Each structure stands twice: as structure tokens, then as C-alpha cells.
Length: 377
Image (cartoon, rainbow, N blue to C red; front, side, top):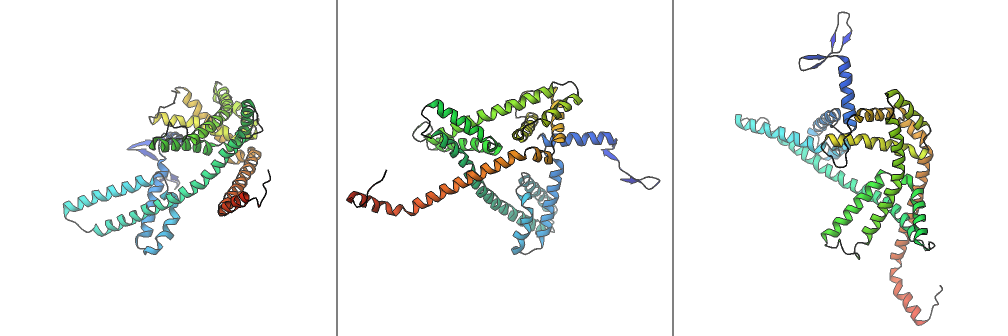
């Protein structure tokens, strides 16, 4: 920043010694923002902020007593759980190792005490981050119980004795999964994938992967997974059809106008899934650029159209409008989740009651054998 003759602030940008025009800087910022959002590059601004925050927490902890460590560090939980945290720690340790080597060459021990103090604080931060991860795993276990309740609800329909034929059972399952559609979100799909992989790994380690007697739960998970994927695919195919119609328009203005019409007429339950499909399609660009070509189709000239689609969706569907348009679907999903939690609570109470009365089973059987009680069917 410089001041002109009239005292006004002038901002100039340089790449090396070459000055950049404001338009070039704006275009560069747009490219970086889009590349960051779709996963091509790590957000450089976020990385710089987290590097600065790590320095801040080190400064805060430097002269503080041990008992104040958790009080201060707890204000930086998001930093300690960031995917950049390990890299930042490694970066500082590498820099310290280089300084140690240079000091050793010069026979200079003036930095030794400061280096040791920094290593001590970094070690404490790593230990605290591990404790936070354990807390996150405990929360994950609670979330897993919720996902298992959805699986149980699907299995309950399949085991309903009122369905006399396989066709009736298949129809009932299709209806049940369709009714649960708002609950079958990315979290549930990711859980199914995780649960199948974990169960397969557990059976493989025990050498029981091909044993049907020990693979029943794996079969259940895979059947549920296939049914959920089939139901989700119906919606995704519909969203892709909308997207394809938009991309076929020749000009950016035509594409945006058609997208606006599609969004205006979109049902409440389709809003969030549609946005997610667009995000996933554009995110695949980042996977391809980073070298992950598994399932990625070369997009060529469609790349700019997809990036425009992503920008237009964000413009036409900001968070507040998404919340408004999907309000009915969100309320319905909240009621369904509440009902599932109530059913799980009832099940837990029944299991606890069974455990509490387990010691009475022998007495009841003895009374039944002696004819002192009658059995009512």
C-alpha cells in the first residue's frame, strides 16, 4: 500500500518484480477460491492462519504454569483437530532440528533452552490432541448407535411375519427405505461403507470371511447397503438429468436461467441432495487433478461449465434459502430421528430389564417344572 499525491491509499500487487493489474489479482483469487473449494489445493489462507495460531498458542503457553495448560489449549481445539496440525508440528520440529545443527556447527548454545521449551509444549499439544481424538471417537460411537438404529428399522420390516411372500417383503422394504430417504444422508452412506469394510476385515483376520455361519451380520449390512444405494440412485439420476439439461445450454446466461427455474420448482426433499450432488460432481475435478483417477471421467471442455454450475448453485441457493426451501424436509427428518432415538431408548430399557431379571430365570423354570405356575400363550 502506498499513498498518492492526494493522500489516497493505493494498493499494488506484485509477483516477484512484476506488477499485477487489479483484474489479474481478482481472477487469481477466483481461481484459488475455486481450486480450494473443489479440493485441488489446500486452502493457503487457512494454512497460514493455522500456522499463525500455532505460534500464538505457543506464546500463550510459554510462561504459564503446568496447571493452566488445559485451560489455554482448550481454546484451540479446532486447531489441534485440524488436518494440518501434524504437518505444522512436523514443520516446526524440522526447523528446530536445522537450527540445532547450525548452532552445533557454531558451538552456540544460546538457543538450547528455548528449543527445549518449544519441544516440551509441542509434545504436550500432541498428547492433548490425542485425548481430543479419543473424545471424538466416543462421540462417534454414539453416532454409530444412531446409524445402527436405522439399520435395525430396515431389518425390522424385512423380518415382519405379516409378509407372506418374497415379493411382499421386497415391496415393503422398498416403501420403508423410500420413507426413510431424508435419513439416508452422506453420514449414513459413509457409515455403511465403513461398517462393511470393518466387518470384512474382522472376519478376514479371524479366517472366517467365507464361513456363512459367522458372516450373517456382514450379509445383513451388504443387503441394506445395496437397498439404500438403489433408492439413493433413483434420486441421483433425477438430479443428474436436471444438471445435464442445464449444461446443454449454450451460453452461461441460458444455463443460469434454466438452473434458476429448476431450483424454483424443486421439491423440499430434493434441495439438500441436489446441492450435494453438484458439490460431489465438482469435487471430482479435484480428485482427478490430484491423481486419483479411480472412477473419474475426463471432463475436458465441460470443466468451466461445471465450475459455473457450482458458482450459480451457491448464488441461487445460499444457506438461508436452502434452510427455507428444505424446512419441511428438515422438520420431517428431525421427527424421524427423534422417533428412532425413542425406539432405541425403549430397546435399551428392555435389554437392561432382561439383564436385571436374568437371575430369576432358574427360579421361574423350577416353578414351571413343579407345576406351581401356569403358562399362558
